[in-house]
Length: 422
Image (cartoon, rainbow, N blue to C red; front, side):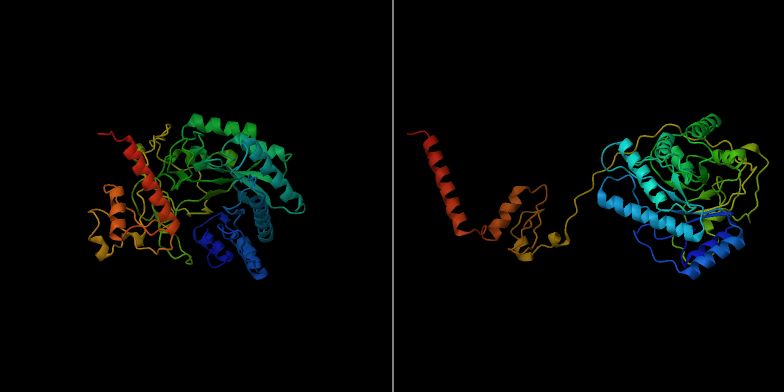
């Protein structure tokens, strides 16, 4: 939920969206340092959370934090920023801080996992009396990002000696992007069987329920509204009806309506659109469906981006939505056209008359080291020569002119020596 206007406003928005759990940013996610939280704001936030009965509440760590980096300066800044996130969550009484493990900048995957574990131990040992957890979010695996596989998450936990304050957050969009096929019943069962074997459900504290704009194994993190992406509705039907996850918060990070004022407290229009039906309309929070089994469409109202609604149990969803299991070949990328400076497009009328057609010149100071002319591709080097003739030749120092005369004389002697004698 947005914290525009102060942290207590996020709780009011959660109440308006009928949330039972909540995720916020405790500070600006795109900055290293955040504003100091006043004591009155902290008290008001905790009081409103208790009055609304919202539980649990978590925060999401800054996107700048990278605990897997080997660069000393970036590593120190990341550890300090993560420490600030933990301290803020502790003051607000949150369950934990959701964190992306990071991307290794040097070495290999094993080195990056060891660096993440070492940073987590350093942070937790400095806060032995705290209760706030660090929730490692499973990632899509884009680039060198760590945490895409259950094996990587299990390795980090093992390197911290199984610290009790380290948990896991699973994102449905990231699962699909990382190659975990959760659309079919068999793939869903196999995925969570592997999770239980490698990590254990006791470590799982939070779900992020997001559909994916990209297909299985794309390794690209692009969220979509539930039912409008490659996952469809069937995986979410299984999740909300799975008894193993009955008490876990399920948070949504789906897009918001563009152009809306961030300070208002009202239900987003995108939350009132029926999912999976391709039609729009207000359902008033009720669940309606047609009689035909192939045309069943569930109408839901749920909060967008950093909000959640967990009482979606025993619902009827369309089962005919297919999930692609093969990664489509991406379209070829077109090379961008070179950008031309504005000053390069200005041509002096007096000098343009002596230039070949299709060329352009740039007015620059003689002291500038920049290129004095950038001819079009069709004109080639001839435009440069024409521009120099129009300017009266290239200005050279006396020594340069003397060297040029010497080179011309030497070339002339060579030509005369090679020429056949009569």
